[in-house]
Amino acid sequence: MATEAVENYLKAIYTLCRESPTGEAGMTRIAAAVGVTTGTATSMIKKLARARLARYERFGGVSLAPKGTRVALDIIRRHRLVETFLVRTLKLDWSVVNEEAERLEHAVSSRVLEALDRHLGHPEFDPHGDPIPGANGRIAERSLQPLSECGAGERVTLAQVLDQRAESLRFLQGRGVVVGARLRVRSVEPLAGTLTIENERGERIALGELAARRLLVAAHAVRGARSGAAR
Image (cartoon, rainbow, N blue to C red; front, side, top):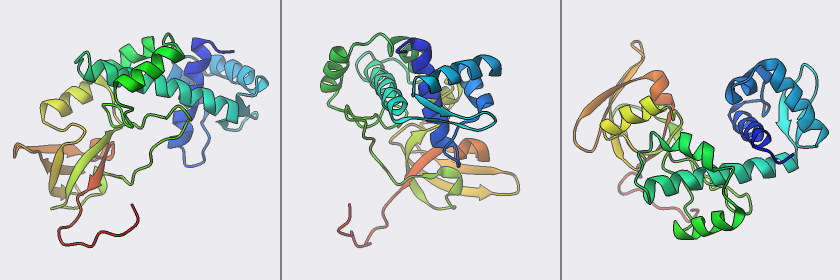
């Protein structure tokens, strides 16, 4: 069943399951993610279950079987390596590469993919900060938190952008809020649902709580703090 449609479904299910507190994806969200009706999604999920790529019970959630997880990680690896190549090598803007990678991820052979990985120096993260699965399916783990949970005065580094809509990425880039940028939280206004940050140019940017929640950051180590043996 290795078709483009199957790969898109498996990738969507994997992503939704990772975001879900139950570890399962709902049929309505799967349908929205792949751009079809709920009835069409249900028919495909039943086929995936028969092929032992997914687990599904009527009126229940959907999850991936081990075989489906392997396929999903492979297509995610392809997508994120292609995005990295498009930004690093072809110098495309990070706001347009998702759509291009969606087209190319299904066409890249395993041989070309591994050559691409070598050419890029085996990156662990793509331009949006998403982890790139290794050839063995392993994913680098980090300790990150939403920017929305940070307090005034905290200094952080932007590590991952979850909202990858083109308009959102253009907004962030125009204000110097990109992966790797060092930011400072200037103020938090819980009642107004806003948070103000300062970028490396000293400019202040006001963000809504939802937008801040979709930015994952790593806190800066406090100067003078002991570095533990665990790394």
